[in-house]
Length: 322
Image (cartoon, rainbow, N blue to C red; front, side, top):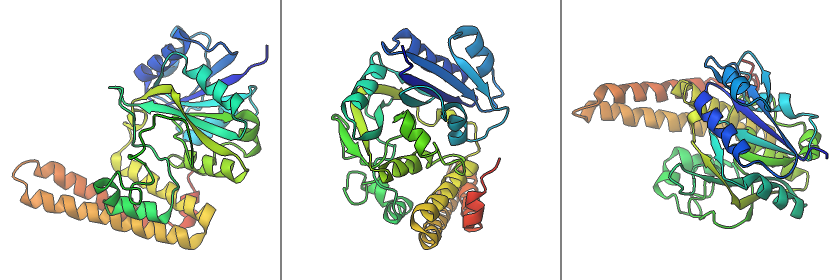
């Protein structure tokens, strides 16, 4: 029987979480023919050895260095067999039946080019800190000025993350989270997979945008439940570098889809946002009776991010070689 689902998991120093992710797949396997590939992105832990010793049915690709999330997925998926590709974070755990629900929904809704699962917190609550709406200059402004955080359930300020949406029913949305994203294999190959110039962050936003540009919709499948230990797969990175990579990817995204002026405005907003946070933490370090050292460190992180983001040109945003 022809392969239906090709599952791709990028791992970077997440051995315990990766083991739990793989266990959830094989403890309740799909009734459809599927294959699993783990792409190790230069881990220094025992991830590769763990997979080889405990999950003999899993294929392993070793990049020997951290080449980025999108590139690693491309290396495993482009031109790989299968009707669907499932892009899965190593810090996820699938509920029983989730794989079949994803496949059945895509089979039944041919207008969908890709779809995301229902991501849950470890305590079972719906996870609302992943992007749902369009990435626009307005959404960046609301985020950087704290309005999205102050008014998370506002349909104006909170449209990007949509905390006001209970996530209890299937829906069509502008973008779905790359932590668990099923994509039609032929379409993924047609658009060239993830943009290799995005090292990390916004690669799923960009992919969903290009899929929609091809005339397909992005779906949300409420019954396909997945626990997501958000951020665990990137905890080892320095916080300032993580925020800067996030900003740089967005500068590139705006340049690519909206032009140089939008990229310039996005960069300006993010520089001001980082500087504002630096000032707030600097003030906290003066007035706090305890924890001054931690506040100073946070202030320094955001001032560094502001400086690095300010120096980022469109050309630098594109040059994401690591």
